[in-house]
Image 1 (cartoon, rainbow over the protein chains, first blue to last red):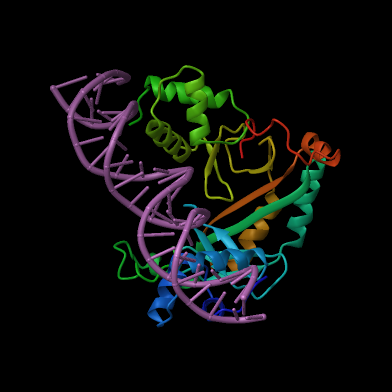
Image 2 (cartoon, rainbow over the protein chains, first blue to last red):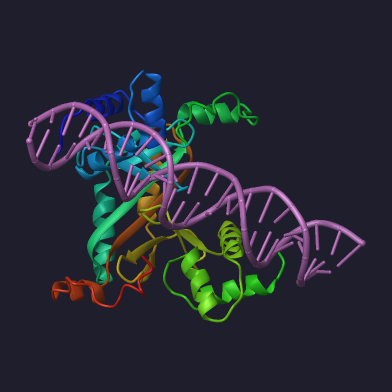
Length: 145
Length: 145
DNA sequence: ATATGTGCAAATGCTTTGCAACGCC
DNA sequence: GGCGTTGCAAAGCATTTGCACATAT
């Protein structure tokens, strides 16, 4: 129930070369730039199926856009993401998990699920901002939102 | 820089009578049902300005829709939300906050911000499910998504 | 008086879908 | 050969925006 098509392979390959969280559109755009011929709808459909299969991590940005990334850790984990460049650090927070489970239990909640994502500016970009990067240079093109 | 219009007042009043997280459209719909005459765009604009002013909590649902709620705790806090009925419990997690700050710091990240929301089934609805409520009754109308 | 807020409808932007052609297995 | 997959364009949705009109202060 999941065939190995040229497109599917190309998408996986593109993702494996990518370290940041990227939107479906950005991934599609990059593939076109790399000479791949893939329809945008296919990218959407494939990313969706891959994430459902647990082979991809999804992050819903503040504006509702979905961002995808192939993570090193295949289990449950969280992310520290740079708002400017999308640079991502994966981390675990076991104490936090148990604390949440406890709180939920106290209130009679079951069937839990949670989202925890941290956004900020990575070392490189917080430095740039300190230096007075008020006017936003030519980085508009590169940011993963 | 923020006038007291009939619409603004009505929206605040509606929110104060509401205990669950609701989307802009649901709030608008309810207001119409209550006999209020307010444009949808106004609801969107007002909810946005209120949340920016910190008078409202916003939650981005999994599908990207924004949900609003007037919370008791005006400071920083998190939510435990029932997937079925939207019932919400506010909670604090100070240890968790510092743990995240620490992790972010280790990686050189600054200007932090984070999202932490827990979803699950409240006592009432987890019981209903256990009882074999597979066919979903007439509750479709009431759920805040 | 005048800066703001409002309403409507059109425009946006991301994502999904219908459907015929296509290509793995 | 059959059934999942692809592509394109159209459709869907939540949200935003332009603009003329209304209205708080």
